[in-house]
Length: 462
Image 1 (cartoon, rainbow, N blue to C red):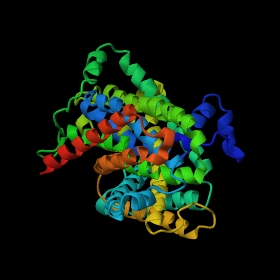
Image 2: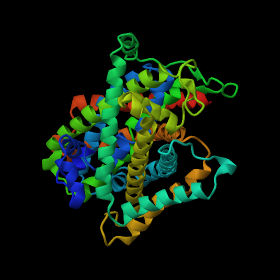
Image 3: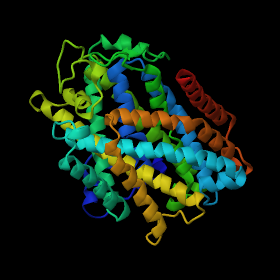
């Protein structure tokens, strides 16, 4: 995804970020491509990994680590297909080269899943806004005019930034904020690992296993945090079908060609193998050391939460950054974390809306290029932001849990998307860039891994 990123700084004040030592380097490498920040370092990634660490310690660390090569080769394969597709969108390719039936089979559930994803991101922004003030958002009958104003205001700001310009500059700032939070997570993780008692548990977490359900202390009878559901959520966030299928549209709009293939692979390794892989691991480690090992029922209490199994809100989860702040400033940790979730929700809401607009326009056989004159594109884009954002407050569930549910739904389509990418990357039009035996093995493992998780999830429900 980072191969879509321009290395040129934005005009105006946004270019100042590129002059800050370290920050400019990170922005150029991770970049402002919408799907990078939103799909890989966004609210879904934070929710799935942080709560995995908080609820289950290091037990699910292996998932976050082992999916990294799967992500690299799947998305790089999608990128190669896009560059050699002749400017066609992925749904056009599926419709004409395989069959309209498969295009509709993928499109309809993709729409449903991404409505939920956008609702979860809007909820993360709302809860993050309240968390920045050290509060939880009101629920049910307690939701008053202030809550409505916050909800509508965030949607309006997102619409103005995305549809009417200014998004790129805001995106640079949001990316910088997310990277500062990543550094904070690294500090927390390193501090936690300075205690040698954590290393045996960390080593054990590298062995594939599914943790037993964790009962919610003080919760309703039978309430528990399910380890397999959390595993599916991590995998679903790591293998986002929409991102895989969106490469053709992004490549066409960015003008990438076959000459960019080798450079794109290097940036994929940098962004997904190094930055996103590091992010995935340190967030789980931070959650395990700063939440799971601290909120044991006999330690601190925050907003009524004293046990790690009870953690589900953004302000409480934000305590994970406490060790990254000096003692006198530790009260800022949840507020800073909450602002980061607003940024993550913002980028994800826009990126998912952009991706789904590509899909909708392509399936309607309309011009799907995002240009100033394409008013139809802008209207669909705006609806994808506004409708889920405005109905999100009526979905009564903590924002982080909504994000996990959305990522689980994401995984359902992952096996089909991987199969589609594998099909196209092995076609004759790929020429010398046709998939090698090793690449096909990785793609097969990725598809089978996703399929096994989906099959076990269905079996569990039945």
